[in-house]
Image (tube, rainbow, N blue to C red; front, side, top):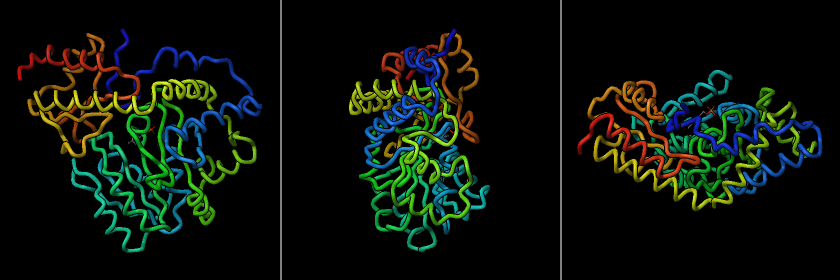
Length: 358
Ligand SMILES: *Cc1c(COP(=O)(O)O)cnc(C)c1O
């Protein structure tokens, strides 16, 4: 039996979207391939609220995160972390020999504008990375106030990880002044994993020109130059299967309406938050809870693995806590094409399995 996925990626993918992956292949150096990739870029610009160029990468989101920090840091990167994915961005810098400092918030706390201000004031950094929505803890950072600080430093490249939030909540890339905004297909966009997408500003491209060793596969400047020269074709062979499905799914997303999609995500988030407060507790301060997944504090000390096994028997799967938060928390994703009724069916199933009484 297929288990409906309430894990924060990969998400359940609509049958019609999955079937698009089976479209017969086309040559990746054809006019049709150019048109396909151009259409995707145009639609992604709408989803991201940007006029910047879009880069598509046959990799998961991590590929472009590594590419961003490596391609555009000439001096030193300030990496802000509120959990596992922020920390991983720092490790990517270190492992590429990119000078970087890590600024970690206390567990369950956001990155604050004040932290960013204090770091940028030193003048040491020419790039910063921020996690918009930290999937390991369920925090959504206050990106508007962070962006207001970053905008005071026009020489700093602003990289934002929106892997688990783009398409599920409004992130206006140009209004926020984000130079490189990164996402992947297997979260709020509702596709299988295997493709990463980012927007890239002129400023980030200029910064990359000053970096001598940008790698090859994830050299963002080289990707940009290639698609300009070859009409949206990439240096290596892309996953055309993903391209067919992404082109189609972006139509679904735009037809649903971005505002409607965000409202659906928020309504589901509110339901899970209320449910969590009724039976357990929220792991993060309600001011910073994510709209796309909820981390529930395991106040009843339930056996999360046993719960998941029992859920599996009725066709659902949730996530245990991430890393050290395993068994101390559990996570329910409410993203992509999940509908409210399916979510409430999951919550009811959990109540029945655990015989919960408020
Ligand atoms: C899933 C995730 C990543 C990693 O993305 P991949 O596509 O798995 O490489 C990075 N950051 C966040 C916030 C994520 O949720």
